[in-house]
Length: 345
Image 1: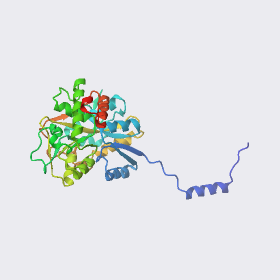
Image 2: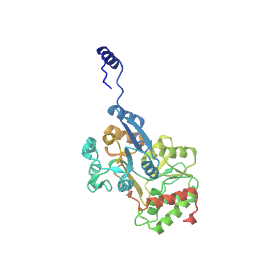
Image 3: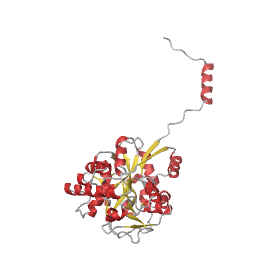
Image 4: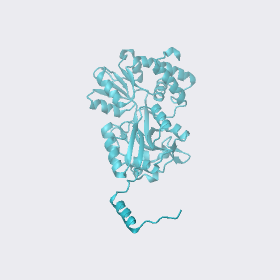
């Protein structure tokens, strides 16, 4: 078929229509964040969106088990994870190495967070896989209105005197490590088969003593205000303490005599992200002093940019390490919260 040519008039008409009709908008970049409550507040996210001309979708995790499930079942670009849990994400090639040199605000972090090689779990074979963001110890919160003295040990959560008045945290890894610490295990993160069985029995006993197992700091506050709660395992540390006090609760906070587990949360970029540059920009943005300080002021969490009052504690902290058998612990935990009795383990 011979080619057809448009007349000059037709060409002019098409050009005029094109000038009058706006061009379609460019596709907006979308950043998918998986984080813990308080790490990506709405106004913080909005500021980032405006600055970078991007859309941000935030999903919240409520436990390490939930975080693992979500990363393995949906697409995210950047997520918050503690250094102990990070190891299995590296092992399974779920995260990618990042270049701290591209993060201008990394140089503003406190000295102990700038030396990434000195922080166990962040660097493997010379590659950096995460950047520190916030940290806390998991102490014991107690009701000063109903307890004359501060508890001295986490063992108080098992005390029959507080039956139905204890809030514990709904997760497998921290709970098994906590019991390992209480039992004096040589390594609470690498329990032997016998120690695992003993820990499972103790956790089944704990289930009988608690009011419930909570998942978020906000849920713990709600439960505390609605019920006669004596003790709370502070999985979120000072964040929970601040939230409870802001709600009017008269509570104290202690590091037990056997010590407390402590976590360091970091930002990591997923291996399959479609927006690695935008993910890195988010990490750098959260390290700006104003953004990091907002985390501390609003949520009571220590940040890695400014020195926090009482931040240099001399009390015994046990930094989280990867547990040797997370899948087995998760299966045991599911049996425990489903109601199996102590003698079943």
